[in-house]
Image 1 (cartoon, rainbow, N blue to C red):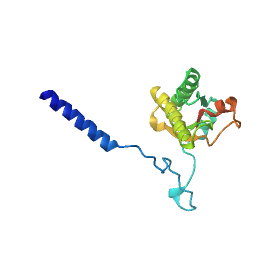
Image 2 (tube, rainbow, N blue to C red; image 1 turned 30 degrees about the vertical axis):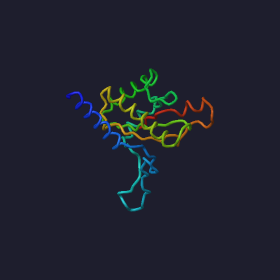
Image 3 (cartoon, rainbow, N blue to C red; image 1 turned 135 degrees about the vertical axis):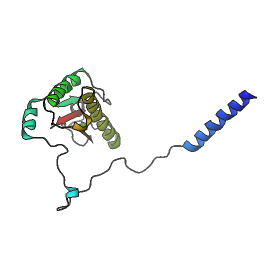
Image 4 (cartoon, rainbow, N blue to C red; image 1 turned 120 degrees about the vertical axis):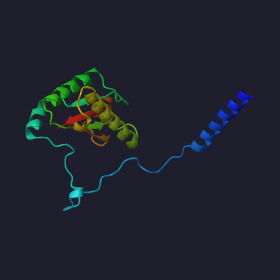
Length: 170
């Protein structure tokens, strides 16, 4: 009797779960928000850099390696990327007022939506690495450009590998 009730309860919960989730339907809405265009005289719509730093910070950052490369369809931080990011951590530690923008990029393969999401995951992976080394999240802004800003034109692996990156700027 007890096992019959238990089986009935599990069946009821499973059926309720199936009914509430149903079949997935494809939505025609975009997951990306487009920023409004700047309107002259309206301070709420002024455009500008996402991070601002002193001229001294910007000058000091000029000699830093600032591009982290990624493997195809990946946002994992490899050993070379870790070396570059460790330099960034040292810089940020010695400049406590500096803020950094991490821009995630992809190659042209895949849909625009997928590439923007992958670019965001790459930027967030860099942000997480910096945070794991003691850099406060509030000092790191992220943005994804997906496939929209390639540094190398071409449809070959050499071009693709240059475009799979995260760029850090001050």
